[in-house]
Length: 140
Image (cartoon, rainbow, N blue to C red; front, side):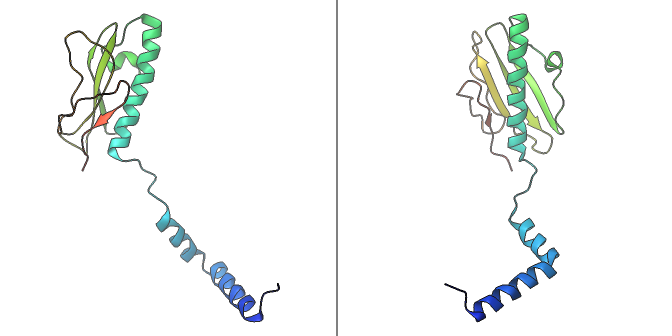
């Protein structure tokens, strides 16, 4: 069914308005696009996942986990500090902190370490429960 002259005119007017006002269109699109910068928790979790990959590679080559991040040659993430809390032949534990979230952290573990419970976050004191999965404090 052909469009009526009124609706065709309305469509043409709307199209002309959109084409003649690119800044308005860009502003409307920009307001609906989420920020591309990941949250602090996402940054910390990403850094810990990179640590898992680096530790796995280290373990395959040396049959033990690295006790220092320096041994793994991880590229630094801006504002993120990673600390390997404990490491041995059968497992490791780590904590990550962001400079903009003082007193808060994310923790992770892989494998078991004799006589050690899982790592706990700084603020909420939650214990990491699932191997290889980062657990974070609530971030502000």
